[in-house]
Length: 78
Image (tube, rainbow, N blue to C red; front, side, top):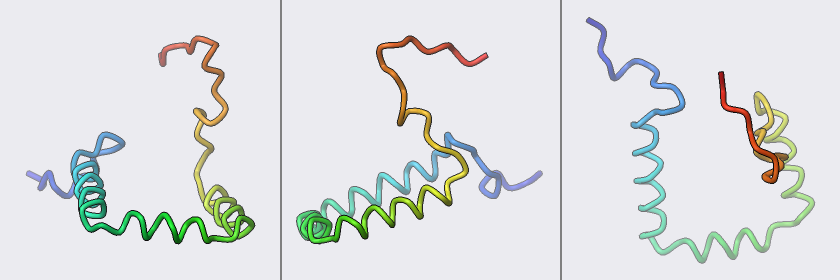
């Protein structure tokens, strides 16, 4: 029998979710949020746009929620 911990869990990955939540909580409790926010405010807007563009180019696909019309009903997945 294969070890369940070595199998991919997909988008509903509970282990990754737990890790993210713990890391986020630890960051907030560290008191470094204000420092990180200040550093972000100091970033050159053009540099930020270029970084976002580079990240989007690596993405497999664009998030459909970015351009969703919330006034239109969505069709359920079939």
